[in-house]
Figure 1 (cartoon, rainbow, N blue to C red):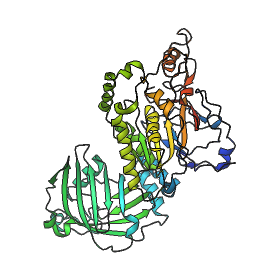
Figure 2 (spheres, one colour):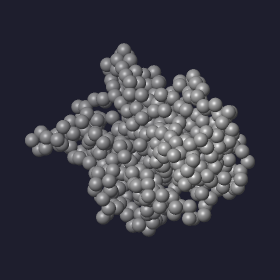
Figure 3 (cartoon, rainbow, N blue to C red):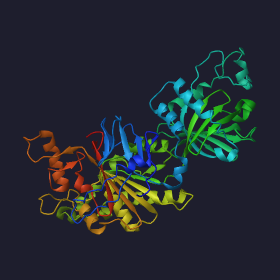
Length: 506
C-alpha cells in the first residue's frame, strides 16, 4: 500500500486507514491512444471556497468509490497538491483552522476571541525577533467603539502622550484604537512587513494604490514585544508617491507603540497592540503553486481560491490575466491556418504563455529551496500549461494539476471539429505526454449526462450539444461543460468527483 498524502477534511484529519479502505483502481481512459494510470489516489485537501470555480453541491463527495458519506458539505472544493514540500510545516493546526473558519463565517467577535484565547493558552508566544520577521496578512482585528472621552484612542497602560492627553480626562476610559486605525483595518486589506529594524503596514486601497505607514523597530522589551515608532508614511498611486499628511517626526512619544505577540506558528500570529487591539495575521510565503486561468477568466476570479489555499498554509500566485486580454486571440483569424483548423499556439498565444513562464521564473527565484513548482490549470489553462511544460521539458515543475480541462480534441470521424481551430490538436500531437519528471493529475466533475435527443431531456440535450463539440459524442457524462473522456491524458492520474460542475454558473 502506498503512503497516503496528508489529508484534511474541513480541518478534520482523514486517517490513512479510512482512505486506504476506499481505494479502487481507476478505469482506462477513453481518449484515443490514452491509458491513464491505475495508481491509487488519496484526497490531499478539502478547501472551503466561497465563490470559487469548482464547487461541490450539498451532496456526498466521492472519488470513484471513495465517498465521504454522511456529511453535507456547503460549497467546498477538493484540490490535490499532495506533498508541497516545506509548506507541510506551515499548514494551520486544527485550532488555527477553527479560528479562521469563525472569521470566514462572520462569527461574533466574542466567538472569535474565544478561539484566540484558546490559541494563546497554548503558550506559543514569540521567542526572539526572528520568529516574527516576514510578511503577515491581516485576517481579522478586534473592534473598539468610538468614545467621545478619548477620540484619539486610549492606551492600555493609561499613558496619554501628546495630543492624546488633551482628550483623555477620564482615567476610566477603556483602551481603544484611533479612528484612523479603525477605519483602515476594517475597510481595506492590509499586511505587515517586519524586518530587523523596520515595520511597514501596507494598506491596499481597493485597487487605487497603497498606503504605507513605516515605523522604526526598536529593541524589544521582551522576547514577545516589538517596540516601534512611526517615522514615515506615503501613498503610492501607480508608482507615484504622495506623502502621508501626518508629521510623525513632531509627534514624539505619540508616534510610539508596541505589539505583543501572544501566539505564533509557521502560519499564524496573534498579537495585541498598545491600544488593546487584537490582531490575527497569516504568514505569507513565496508562492510554489501557480494558477493558470481558463478561457475568458481573469486573475481576480481566483482570489477566493487563493485565500482558501493561504488559510491552509499553501501559497499560490495567479498568472496575471484580465478579461479583455483574451480578445488578443482574435488575431488568429488573420492566419490561414485558423481557417484550415491547423492553428498553432505561437504566436497567437504568446501573450499568455510568456506570462506563465515569467511568473514561474519569478516564483522559482523567490523560493528558498530547490523544491519544484506545482502548476494548477483551470479549464483551457490546463492544456495551455502543457505547452509550457513541453517547451521547458518540465524543468522546475514537480506536479501538474488540471481542473475541468479538455485534454483531447474530438474523436476522429465523429463529425466534430476542434473548437480551438487546431490549437488543442497541435498540443495533443506535440505534447501528448507530460515530461517524465512531472506528476500529472486531471480532475473532472461528474455532474450531468448528456443525451442526443431533445425529447429525452431538454437540459441534458443542450449539455450534450456542448459535449459533442468538445469530445465528438453527446451521450457521455461530464461536468456540464467538459465531458469526462476529454479530460483524460496518458500518464496522468484521472480523478472523478461526484456532483461537481464546471463553475458556479453551471
